[in-house]
Amino acid sequence: MSYETIEIHSGSGVAVLWLNRPEVRNAFNEAMIAELTAAFGELEAEPAVRAVVLAGRGKVFCAGADLNWMKKMGEMDFEENRKDATAFGAMLYRLHTLKKPTLARVHGAAFAGGMGLIAACDIAVASTETEFCVSEVRLGLVPATISPYVLAAIGDRAAHRYFLTAERFSAAEAYRIGFIQELAHPDELDATANAILGELVQGAPGAQTATKELIRAASRRALTSDLMADMAVRIATARASEEGREGARSFLEKRSPAWVKAAKQAARTKKKK
Image (cartoon, rainbow, N blue to C red; front, side):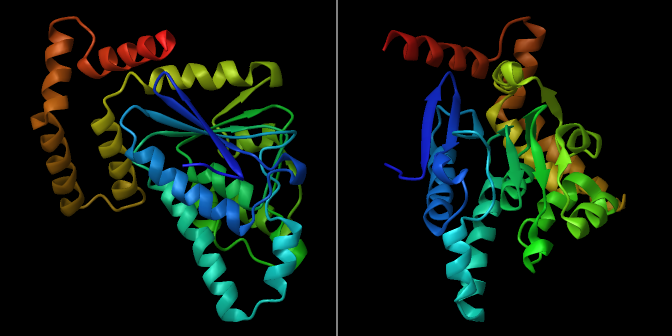
């Protein structure tokens, strides 16, 4: 499928999805939202893709909403705005629930909806010069659609400050409050991201999907007998699966599991082409 606002490049088991509107700092509009939603489905269905990287062309990762799109929304009635916001929320949810590991490669700036994209990813790596901002209240808006993801990343206390002040904060502060998991010098950003991706492709695809579901199921739940029973079912299912059996066999036989061999073979085939 061809896209106008994004680009996708794949190789060695990793797909890099580039936000590709550098002339407007990769700001969102309805076309980009629709294309991102479609692309996430496409990448999830591609067996050769083991992990997805989200990155931005140009000087910044994502500056939030496109000004022309904001103007258009300001002229819409309530119902039209609700439908538009629902589409944006569905896109974030599609990213958050993607069955494959996701990594945000962040540089320059990430404002408003751009922060939502990062928070919806499993892992976030940023260059040390990146600035962040939840800017909505200065525009008379609220960060509603991004809040479930950003709140889960930074917690209520940090959200009270940065949601209410809409002040810009540094990459170091983003790292301190848990929004970013790894910082890198701009020249080392790709190397840092690639090192994490190298670790991700060592894992079993089915187990990673199940683990993402596990995190969502267990997060912030009380430790009850129902939760413990649920966890027992999940690990028993994994142990009895073909991946679980292959993982145990490969460990005991001191060899690489089948999914690692498959990833290496796919990389070699890609290079020959």
